[in-house]
Image 1: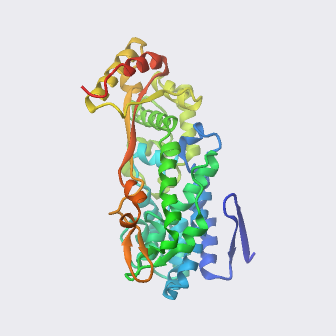
Image 2 (image 1 turned 45 degrees about the vertical axis):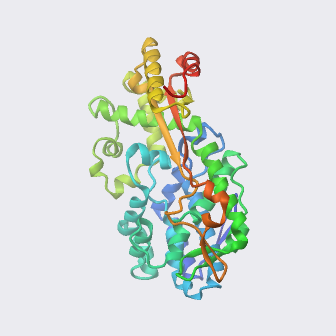
Image 3 (image 1 turned 60 degrees about the vertical axis):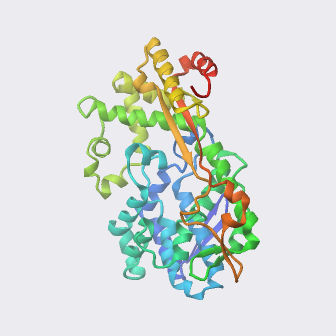
Length: 418
């Protein structure tokens, strides 16, 4: 067929026209095995245990990012017609930017120690089917896209900014999509206003027309709220902690004490042997199957950790951000002591998980306003954005639910600092 439509829950009909070479390339890339794997990678990792609707995939998100990138470029081409020659570079980069995600997305990236940007670039460079599709469009396209994904290609600043910046198409889609799938209302953006305000600065980089200032301010506030309410949610942090402990425990037990297939064995104990095939063979399904096996036949400690995760019999967490560093360690000491009294290993079941995030970073692809005469950093114009520069976060004291009430009472009597 010459046309194809993806019916998206956010963007409605995303239509592709095979008669347009860049879109024909996109259709082939979507049909490739590495891209189809993204159907088996959850967008929000284990957040489905916190928000029951958080079941969307990296596949859905990646198509959404492509769609927004195509819309943004269409707007910018009216200002800079020279950008038309970068369509394939932008379409390919937007579509393939998440190819290198580990199982459970950012959670898997953290617990396995893999970098998804580097893996995305490597897959584009080295995977035969992906490279063949890109090189068929135009020789050199694969390396250009890989370079854009890993930061080594800065051929065009505006194109790079649409793929990776503080107002890129990735963030615009995931804020909308994650808000929709989790049932929260914080991620509602004035997408039309943001896209219409995109412009080109005199240096060729992306900029924002002042008419879009409030929409961008709103976007940055939305991102702040989504981190506080979804991404760094207490239960989500507990799930991430449990998964981290599961992988750490499995690695410590070793291949002689627990079963793992050839692919997972390399991910656990021989990461230097992870080649493209081994990387792409791991996904949420394979990882989840191992959790089931360890729950049923693993050593007692691994069995219990997997049971807690799979049955949602989770640990508890108390936010101790208000305490001084010394008192945080004191609180952890109490948690460990109470856990030992319950016969639970404090090295496994207790710890402090610290999260920090910046709603806006002026020195990392900082946003600028351009009205045709004056170019200004957005934080110099907006007091609201200036306030968002300050980092925020939480310090979660992870502990077994069996000691929660006793520990909570103890912490409530502690001063904020000694």
